[in-house]
Length: 256
Ligand SMILES: Cc1cc2nc3c(=O)[nH]c(=O)nc-3n(C[C@H](O)[C@H](O)[C@H](O)COP(=O)(O)O)c2cc1C
Image (tube, rainbow, N blue to C red; front, side):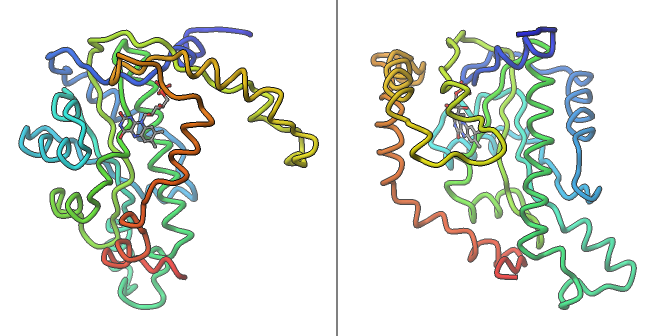
């Protein structure tokens, strides 16, 4: 492989869930936020925002939503949100009624477009943080209570939470979590037929490799083999996490 400092940063990326109790200085915060803004934005809609959570009480509440105490200890903590609220205000200033059918920024295509933009911005921030010697963990767990999160952050109409990002100086050194062989994830031109994509060759070795990895959250035993993890997650009840109803309450029309 070819290498440089950026590649090294990306190849050494692993989630950090224990942070030193040290604040992140203002220049670093400004740098990380400016880098996030530099990410690509589909049709230049700039349809995301991020809430910087500094209030310990709000951090504690996020940790409660996520059932993950380390969220409360993150020196720097963001919640990235889909934001068509700002664009609705701008459109309104141009005579368009966001409540009417002519305002399409609340439809499903725009929702996913904004979600993509938000994730790209978050990832740019994450990479910049690692390049400065900081560590991060992306937080989907705060979405356990979408309604609670929307209330807590006062998220207005046409906004929707995407992910959290906790950032701080690492106070742990987890080993790199294995990834599947590249050939299992990268295909040429078309998706291969199952008959030409024999998982039974590569999967057992990957399963064994994953089963040797220790997650520091449960350091007393190795994690389950990848196949076992997929089987477990495939049966998990996520019926409380439906999107259409909660997005509708925020003004989105995801059936359109
Ligand atoms: C969208 C997304 C949501 C995630 N949510 C959480 C989370 O809520 N809590 C957590 O500890 N890790 C979370 N993670 C981190 C993953 O568990 C982690 O990336 C994965 O296990 C691979 O480990 P690594 O990042 O150390 O390589 C999330 C990652 C992604 C991409």
